[in-house]
Image (cartoon, rainbow, N blue to C red; front, side):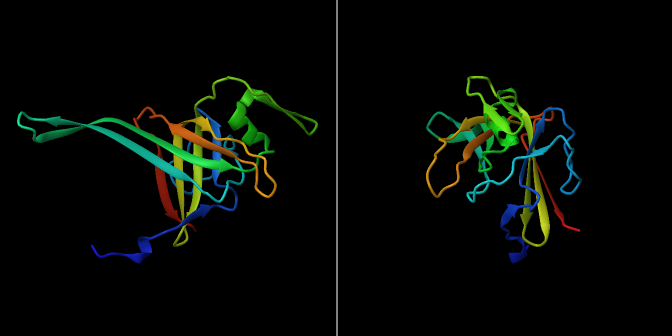
Amino acid sequence: MPNLATNVTVGKPKASGGVYSAPTGTAVPVDATTALNAAFKSLGYCSDDGLTNSIELENSDIYAWGGDRVLTVRTSRSESFQFTMIETLSLEVLKEVYGQSNVTEVTGTLTIIHNNVELPIREYIFEILVTGNKVKRIVVPAGKITEVGDVVYVDGDPVGYEVTLACSPDSSGNTAYEYVAAIV
C-alpha cells in the first residue's frame, strides 16, 4: 500500500466541547456520531496542551540455557489519558476533581471541600475533530482520576486542573474504544 498524506491528521476539540463524563452505567455510544446521553456533562475548555493518551506495556524475557532470549511475555498493560481542565469555576469540573459530593452550589455560591474521599470510576468521552472533515470519538467506559497536578495561581496564565485518568478494563477487557467517521 502506498504512503497516503490524507492519512496524516491533527486533532482539536469539537466546538461543543471535547471532554465529557457521566456516572458508570450510563449508555455509551458505539460510533462517532450518535448524540451523547444527557447524563454526559461537558468539562468545558481544556488547555492548549491538548489530550495525551499513554499506553504502557511491560514485558519479561525468558532465556534458554546458553543465554538466548527464547520468549517475551507481557506482564502488564496500562492506559491513561492526561489533560488540563481550565474552566476551574465550573461546577462539573470541580465535581470531577474534588468528588461529586464535595462540591455544592447554592444561589451562585460554590463550596468546595478538600478531603481524602476516593474519586469514583466514571465514564469519559473525548470528542476530536480530525483532518478531512472527520470526527474521532474516544470512549473510556471505566476511568478514574488518579492524579491531580499542582494548581498554580499566577497572573497571566489560566488556573487549571491537570489530571491523569487511569483506564480500567470493562466487562469485555477493553480500556477504550475509538470511532472515526465523516462529518455529514
